[in-house]
Image (cartoon, rainbow, N blue to C red; front, side, top):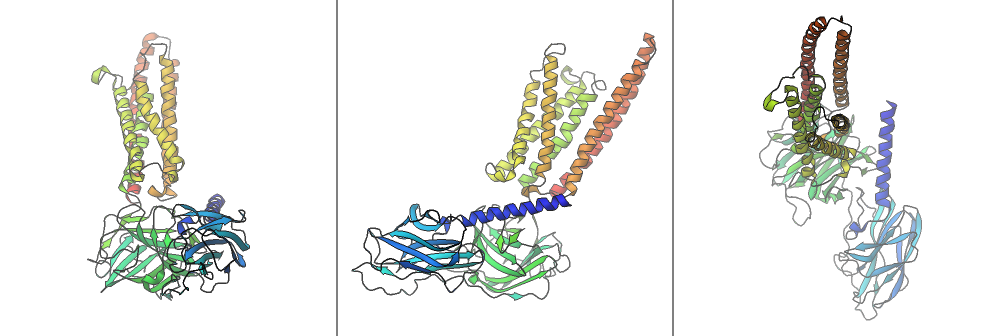
Length: 592
């Protein structure tokens, strides 16, 4: 128990470290436009920091010192904007005074349009120079987003306006400041959700398909109930971090409309967001959601909200009366900050319109391509290659008669099984590349081992085409090379299968899968040991026979006959065992 706990703690530490690094190194250029940190929390409303400029009048080409100061803070983002159009792009450029605490950012492909922090160390004052461009607007206002802690930050703190000498008087436009995200109140749910109306009044996505969150805490549940021009959403699942769902036009993450329920201490925050790819979701305003409520009980998180079917004028939110794939995911969270889900999201088998006919649907955590990849690899490296090796090693004398094309029967069986292994491996190895659209770094060592196995599987039949005649002096070298390459491929394949079973795309139930795979390895080794012992005892039995040649030959014939029967029985039992192991794994893949 200690080792898994230590591994779990180490993983969490690594995740926390990665997340802190990614948010506190100041490289926040993708937020230059809105200047809103994606922390999953609402910003503070009353600024306690201030921005001052060294002069109130400026001309194009001037260099003005800008100071951001206040109580200790960890991060910041500073920009200059047209005071009459604060939603417009950054204006001018900055020059650093102290590169140890501040850095220039590239916004809209222009270097120096914004300034941010370099580390998460606390600071109370930042000074930089702003360079007025030749095409500067009449009035400039500096804006700053300041982060004191992950959950405590201020967005777009304004400075006083500085103006060009001959500019007309500045008048505040009607909508100069972007409204800040405010926290919408959420009530407490008094009881768990129920699946009794699924397929009648509710459109439900469940895993397992017939589970009921009212009775089964492990039930992953999502329901949609249409009410005129709005939809009531209910989501439930076992999680200590967050649960989420997303609407998608395809089976890939990216450009999706997502909604998260994030646990922080004993509170749940309901947060709309958008997915721009395989990266952290971009959080949006909660203003589009109504009637938000949540509940925490016995490790189960539940949340609900109402959303209008259409949201005119709101970007990145899908209309709900169209068909989409639906994703369901859960993962870890710390202080409201979410981490990548530990397994592949549950994805519906097809697109659905949740405002249409009420249905009860399920999904899969693994796409058909990944399931097929795993199934073919299990067939190749648990069945065909294992039987082929035993036939070549122990059944030469059993099936020595010539068969098709004048070759011995054992050789024909061995060759057929090994070619099948190579073909299945080549087909299977292509599938993850088709699914990912290229190489995936998240596959870890499994991908490298898999490619090594494929290389060896292709190399084996190529080497076999250069097999020297039986009595050729080079035959011994060939035999050892052939055996070494094949043995290496089998060992690496088993290691790749152990690693692959834990990957998010095909995460088989654990720890049973590990025990079953270990059982298969022991089963195969035990079979080889039994056949080796039998072969040794048979050879010893012949050696101790009387020197009479006739007696030796007669005894040898009887011994061989008995040995052949024993080997056939062992092989039959072995094949039955292998098929059993294979069925267990294929069944597990089918139910992922």
